[in-house]
Image (cartoon, rainbow, N blue to C red):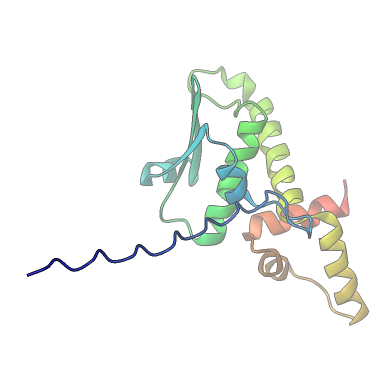
Length: 167
């Protein structure tokens, strides 16, 4: 009895090129940004719900973004973007043990991160274009429509509209 010849191996599956952080339409892809940062790890943990759904934990040479697994897809995307912007800025300034007098600074930092996330996920030029299209039809744009058009949560849609409207 002879042994059958070995089966030929299938050709290797070509690896897809990583998605670019910034799309041609000016939108930022936080998942691609995460892949481009090997020092940042992602963890899903229900404990993140205690801090609103996400938290950034930084240590020497390692950063961990912790997301609540109960977040829906849009909220998870926005929460990841929010924590990555904090990471770019050197981390959040809200940490245990800080004096309560720093609350104003923490609130200012959070507000700026929310605005930056809104600008990245809902680019002002693309939002203006959407508003102009709807205006030509005599239609008003509601925040939920912006959320649907840009795949963000309602808070981010509202922040983008407020940022476009100015102070």
